Image (tube, rainbow, N blue to C red; front, side, top):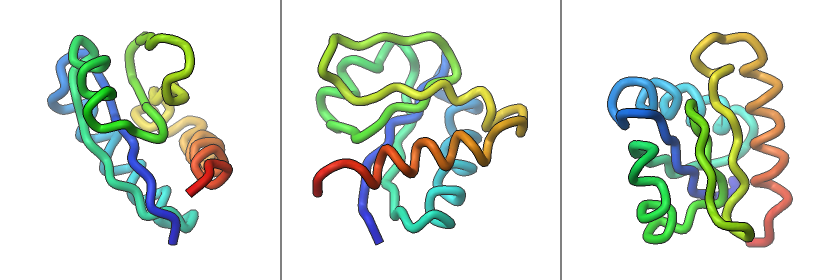
Length: 100
C-alpha cells in the first residue's frame, strides 16, 4: 500500500474537517492508499502544512498557499456526497503519481 499524508482543512478545524477526514481515509484505503490524515483550521493551514509537509490538502473552504506547495482539492463533495467518489479517485490518482 502507498503511504501518503493529507491535511484536511475547514473554517474552524472541528467537525467538518474531522468528518471529511474520516470519509476520505476510508475512500483512499479502498483505492490502495494508506493515508495519514490530520485536520486544521483554515487560519492554521500555512504553518500546519509547513510542519506536516502533506502530499495533498483537502479543504472545505477557500484557501491558498504559495506556489510550489502541495496540491489543494476542494472537499465539499465529501460533505454533500455528490461527486465524492470521483473526487476520491482524483485525489488517489494524484497521490499515486507522486514519487515515493
